[in-house]
Image 1 (cartoon, rainbow, N blue to C red):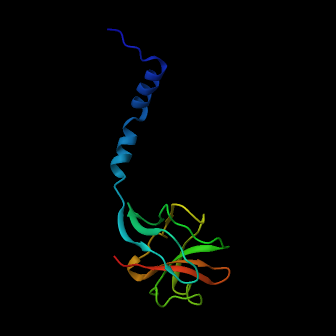
Image 2: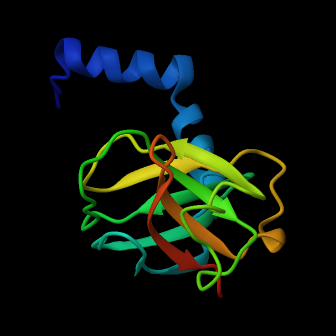
Image 3: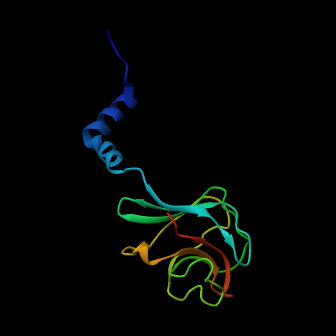
Length: 145
């Protein structure tokens, strides 16, 4: 019986010979992320829609804004982790004893931001969306399991 693989079959065979095992190995290493914290936002200055979570993906800690995330447009919006509880954090102290995770790339939709390596989440009590330019705390969420 004659089979016809043609050029496409040749490329597949070549890919398998050169590095076909690599994607399988990478897939095995990519374990599912472990969700450490998750929740919704508590309004401070403005409402923020959508959920968020912090997950461990391999060695990295990642702040994930869910697909339904929506925040009012503003300059210089950033994500911080704060040592203060949601009830105690305000415009004036939002960046004190906090670490910058990242500048917000978009005002809506799913997004992922890596937490700086070496961060001990046990030292932090909340995650913030804060306009640093105008010192305006938009919203906060508690880091509770």
